[in-house]
Length: 120
Image (cartoon, rainbow, N blue to C red):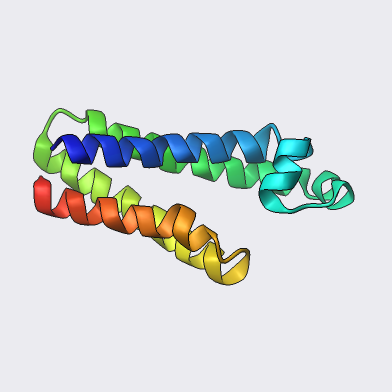
């Protein structure tokens, strides 16, 4: 069970970090480097990135909700749903935006999904 909390918690924190990058740091050197952007493109796409960041925040909120929900059966279902959302988002992003998203987002979600499925 501890593996569920650690794994899902790390994925939740990752999505909070992505939220910060996309909503607040998109046009900063850190944001430009993380996403391989030019300053001009970052400035032009800032509002789109903020929207993406908000969605990453929703993923994180759902994962933390699942971790904190008092009923273990319901908690498992919440975690499975949100981890599947992370997995789908990671797969889509790896095919359409950047291949590394597969290993940063999709693979960890798949691993933790398997842990949740087996441990809860």
